Amino acid sequence: MLPQSLRLLIAPAIASMAAAAATAADDPKPAPVSPTGPANAEAAEVGRALRESWPDRPEWLDMYTAILADEEMSPQYGWFRTAVTQSRYGWDATSKRLDRDGDGKVARKEFPGRDEEFARLDRDHDGSVTKDDFDRAAAPVAASPGLMLFSRADRDGNGKVTREELDGFFRAADRDGHGFLSRADLEAAMPAPSASRGMSAGDRPSKAALIRGLFKQEVGSLQPGPKLDESAPDFTLRTNDGKSEVTLSKLVGPKPVVLIFGNFTCGPFRSHAGNFEKLYRRYGDRANFVMVYVREAHPTDGWRMESNDRLGVATAQPTTYEERVGVAQRCGKLLGLGFPMVVDTIDDSVGARYSGMPGRFYLIDRQGKIAFKNGRGPYGFKHDELEQALILMLQDEASPGSGGAVQAARH
Ligand SMILES: [Ca+2]
Ligand SMILES: [Ca+2]
Ligand SMILES: [Ca+2]
Image 1 (cartoon, protein in one colour):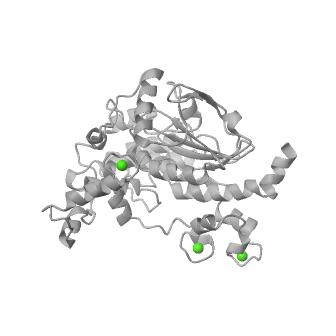
Image 2: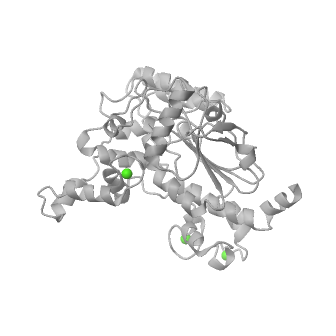
Image 3: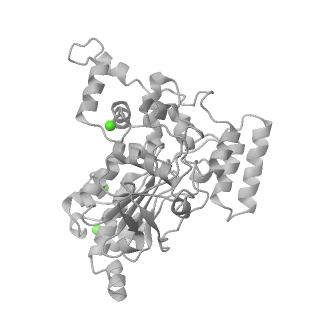
């Protein structure tokens, strides 16, 4: 994926901070477009002309013109600007449904779910759920200290920081081996982010490499995927252990489905593995979780990532289904997810239909309709937004209100 490498592939001394920035690339911010010469200016002009004259152009065209114009990577780059989260559970819908006294807040007594779910919806911890808890524009642009520490400590890149890894961080920071960390040790271990997080020249892919990655669907699927409220396309795929088959339509009905698309070589996706596993442990009794393993984002024969090489997460793009299964098994072993992983066909039939590359999260309701779809990854990876929607969907599905009524009519 484009934005990852912009921030990930920089000087080794600040590589971890940059990785933090890459995974922090969740929140939209204003995006300067910085053409650096006449050719780029012309390409930017062509991009603008296309946007103006072709309102329903395909998403890939925005990416294509952004690459040609050398736009600066950001959530406003190319298709990230337009392919944003679609959710049935934004603030307007939520307040309409739950704010019964119309005071602009959902109080604890107005929320039918559990205490811990209410606490998770109340993101700013002010005791009620309001528009602010849904407003992501105010989110900080810089990586949080927690994310920096996470990126430093998660040495095997599996999206989970273990006690051992934290110990490892401690030992590395305790340069004199005295068994405690001084202020200077920690400041040295986690320096202030560099003002310029640009990718070093040697790591930045050429325009040609980016165009190749785009049309090989490594940068992302060329299709937009199903829209909100559309039927989730059915599929049958085998699990990565080869032992069973999962058919989506057979999962739909009793419980909502959480569909997670991802791949081994996408660092930002891997960094969310612990988040997904915790979601599964919180809600796995009330929703079916499935991961669909898709095309590699950063194969060694494509947009190779040094950070992946360092972690031993390196593979060429599989050319056969068996090869893809092999990489999916490595991925499954590293990420250690408690829910099934199925492997897409080598012609990307499911990943393409769902716009699942390099990663995507969907919630599918009990009628088999899309209730939530995150924006294009990795900028669109917002696991807390997914959890917010999942919590609200579970109330919806459990209550005899709107969603339940539809189910009652159907069954
Ligand atoms: Ca209220
Ligand atoms: Ca609140
Ligand atoms: Ca780890």
